[in-house]
Image (cartoon, rainbow, N blue to C red; front, side, top):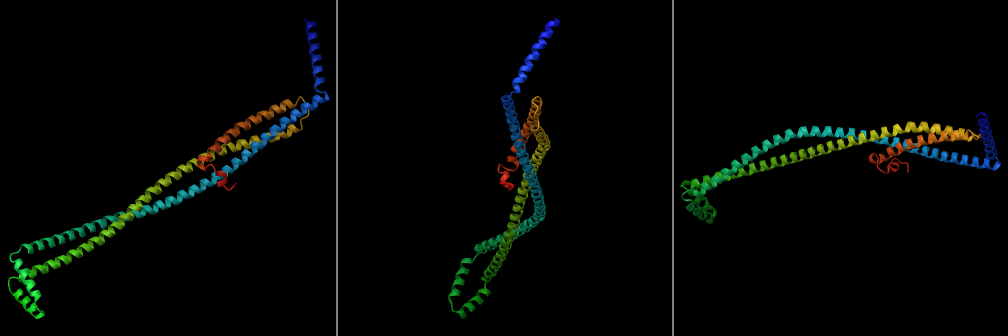
Length: 302
């Protein structure tokens, strides 16, 4: 048994010596060195990609901060406007109520005056002797001025004088009706103007309130995006520093038995970079929702 183990050890040593002598032949050494340098260059490209991603994320963070600040200013301005509109609405509402009450009173006055005119006209039309009165008025109107005056005096002394009095009352009532109509229309115009202002103010109040809601929602989205980006940036910066340091060390590694360990270390860091960059891409994809697809252009980068 001991002889067998000794024989196996000798064979293994011989194979190891043979393989070592083959590996370290000049051509094999050059080939291995080229392969190693190719892998190093691949990792260097990965580092450049990670640094570019970090630069994009840094820019995105700046853009998001700027957008957040602008939205906060916009919200504050909207809230000031909302306060102004609320004050206007509080001032206009009782004014409209007062004007509406005044208009209703003027309308009632006009309707009463109108009713009085209608009743007086109807009374005159239904009075006995009206046709004779109308005929006498026409006759008096056809005479010369002196005769018209005498005719008028005669009419004033007889029963037809009552018709003149009624017509005078009708004329006065008609004037009062026109005055009441003018007052009612003027008050209606004031009421309509104030009601229009109140409706416009309330419409603006609603619109500004909705805009504040949309702005608050946008601020929330931007802040979430800022948080996502910052959660990625710090780990990415750290892993980039580690990767750059490992690459610098790898360039100085010449011993063949140490290169596999160096490559494994670089590969582990590269995997961490890939994972962090994937999170970064996810954060960048949300920038389209908060800043728009043209966020680089909007930030003045391109």
